[in-house]
Image 1 (cartoon, rainbow, N blue to C red):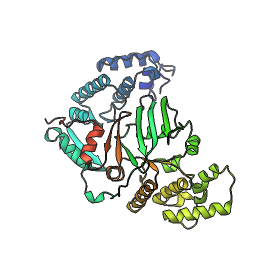
Image 2: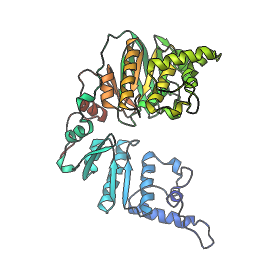
Image 3: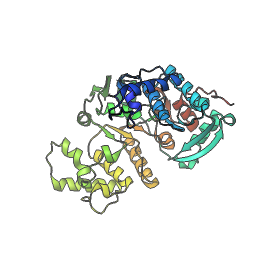
Image 4: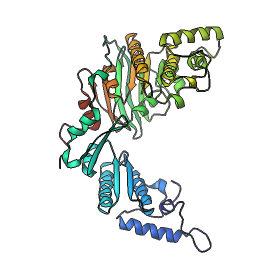
Length: 410
């Protein structure tokens, strides 16, 4: 807990007590100092946790686990918020723990760390273990192949059309360490994909562009006019919409009817005056256009399948006249049939002249739908590449920041 001291955090739930039943703060501090000294960690036991650096907080979690006699540590992306020197220190500590007999499961998308720290390397893809090899018997190429290898038949085939003028220009968008000075352009009729590893800042960028989160800097130009949104309502009025990654938490009103979920934006843009007959007719039209499978538009949207929920969310935005559509993981949690329908819808929107921004962790989806791909890494858009002819392997290398040389063998 951030408001407690280092010592209090380590003993939280298992406090040392005096014979009167009170917390023995002095003994806890002394015991904490002993543990820290054993691990060569320079942290003041009296320090308040919220005042520690990210690296010190990460180290504190390890100390807490060791204090409770953990024999196995699971470290999930432990260096994602650390600098180079802090990462090196954490790696040194991890190696010392392993040398002392502690088992470590180290999860990371930084391959150099995996090769440096791992004795065996397991690759997971789509929730399945693809391969496990001794580190000395595999290379970066082996790992990347396991990460992306798949049948080319899984790719959707998009017809690429002519692109128009620039419809959206993003200039210097920033928010702390999450998004750093991101700039790019999207043309009319273009699907601009945004790729990167989890934690690269992709969703954070879309939230800034839509006005969900407050930016530190940046300007958004729509068809040459500065419309920089300070709220989602401002973005919607300007002609920008966002189909969020988590439709159940940030997209749909689950207990409410499909009719209300689809019509809510159009009703707001119309000033809140609702003509129920016109509303029902328009929703019926969109349901038919998107082939949303339901019994009636009055049934709760939560009763629909995942794919039909997603299409209901898309129908909401199709009811308005939007110049830019932003999709965050558009086919997450939907079946193959619904994926194809959503792909065709995105392609049709682009063909009508809309500008499309699409964040996707699905590699075939990103490659087959995008005209260009902006590569994000550690909050920065480090490259913009033409999607035509790009392979999954080369794209993963871009995501990981690899220059083509192997991390190593042996």
